[in-house]
Amino acid sequence: MAGALDSSGVLANLLSAAEVRFDGVPAPCSTAQFGQINVQVPYTVAGNAVTHVQALYQGIPSGSLDLVVVSAAPPCSRWW
Picture 1 (cartoon, helix red, strand yellow):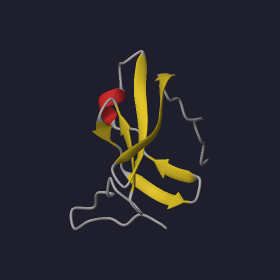
Picture 2 (cartoon, rainbow, N blue to C red):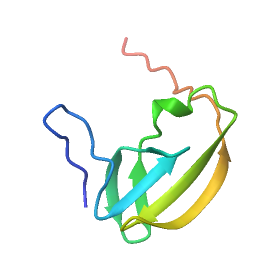
Picture 3 (cartoon, rainbow, N blue to C red):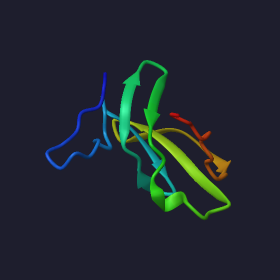
Picture 4 (cartoon, helix red, strand yellow):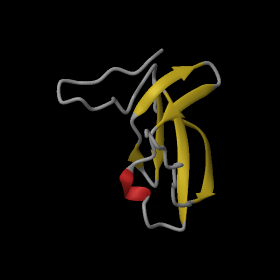
């Protein structure tokens, strides 16, 4: 199932009864299907060395782990 934008243009934090939290902060969900959920890491993770990630289904924790946080550096594109 694909996420939908609300009236203010924000992705929902709950999709198909699935949710992912980073240090307790719900993450915006873009897609969810059996065995996979795609989320956007909340900005509150920026500057942390580690983040605790927890997946929930129907409000019940289904897994968690601690991840090292690294800076994102997308490649620069040239259009000329």
